Length: 158
Image (cartoon, rainbow, N blue to C red; front, top):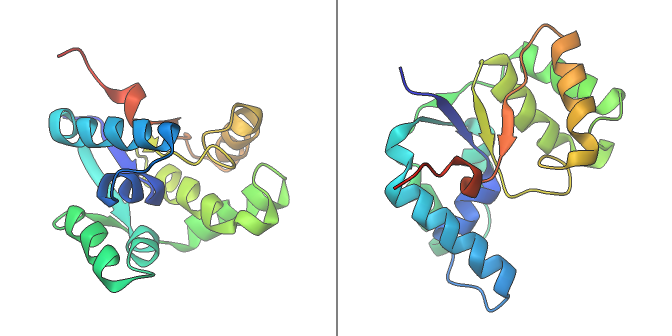
């Protein structure tokens, strides 16, 4: 059985967008594309209806490019348990109130028992200052938290 990965919205954005002129963003885009092409087959990939909604927003042409990358990937449901865990993440200040969608991404992955949550969102998800609080809230709610990582961190040797 392959390890499972929840693909958060920022990863899809970097995967499908034109190369940025910002050097750090461009590096993240290239790492994301390399991971998708060379390493994604090593994992069972999942998204959620929230990811589909978020990547489907905005310019229709760009949204379709993002959606095309997710074609055929299984969607994890946003359940009552994931909504409750997201509320706990916010209420216990693991995630700020204005970032409830980020709390939902974490909660969906945790409730469904996904191994990794892949993101480029350093503000609220892949944030070392928030990590222990996120993990504690998940565990207190009876869920094992996913390991939060970037595409670069999930590149095997090749």
